[in-house]
Length: 280
Image (cartoon, rainbow, N blue to C red; front, side):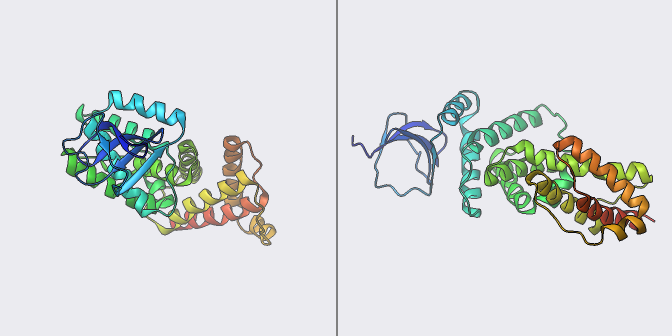
């Protein structure tokens, strides 16, 4: 045994292994790599793996080990192959926390499906609009899961997986993604309630509004100023929509504990006016 050798700690499937290499735990992926391998076997350092994920953070490594004790090996193996595919499709390094969060989520979801629980994602439309790239990757991931497990996975679950992918790509907390979707969804409900209308979730005006709220929230959080030379005219011309936009702004302030600039309220007003006119 040489210092550069990879020592097998766990075989998840024929393609995915957990190994120890130079004092670090690594997930290595290569087709047929795990065939007839067992714990304690050595893998030569000369092997060219298709993908290597390094669990450098001690907390992540410990959480992953706990996950291994309660999640079926095949499920972990499939999830790691999915993460390998996702990693190859994006231009950034995945947050290593995803090896715990996504696997834990998928394992729990599969159990719920087996128990015939209803899976509903109230923000699926918002997620589709805000994160199209992540949705595309999540759809492909779900097809991989369905093919390998034989389990039919509801479309709402695609949105949940997309959020995990977004979190892994952007290295932010998944709660932030959910927060954006919640604020956007709530803003739409405020408009529908106050104007007594029903906004089509398939309309271009709806898509533009959701997208605008998403980036407005980011600007507000980061305190990025925005210029709006038409604010006085907007307030005068679209009084009802401005008042409604102001109510949405107060809601956002309550969620973010940040002041919403009047310029932002002006732009929200324009979108509210479009949604109102589209429903007439």
